[in-house]
Image (cartoon, rainbow, N blue to C red; front, top):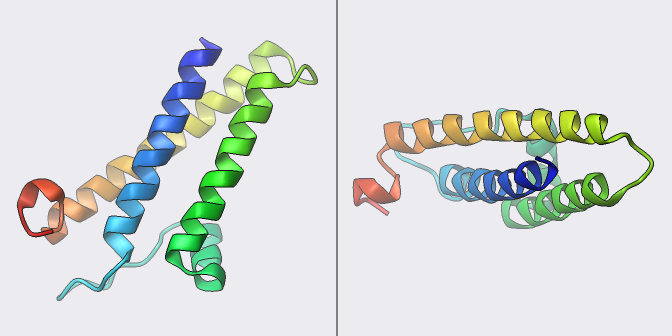
Length: 112
């Protein structure tokens, strides 16, 4: 189960960062798009979108690696933390997919 959460979290993190980039990398006429996560918004303002996403990816992968490998936490705690990360990241992906679809900039909309 731990491996499943690790790989699911990694996949969802990639999807989250890709959909975030699609939403925020360029203005979309008629839309005022902002990052909903205040910590990520601060990071993007400080480092820029691409660098901020790279930093976020590195930190997330480090946290996942720590949770997967550490012996300092009980297995159940690791599962719980990874479950929370997986669920919240999955929610972010769903929100981002909804946003890119509504704005008409989803790859399947043919406008990218």
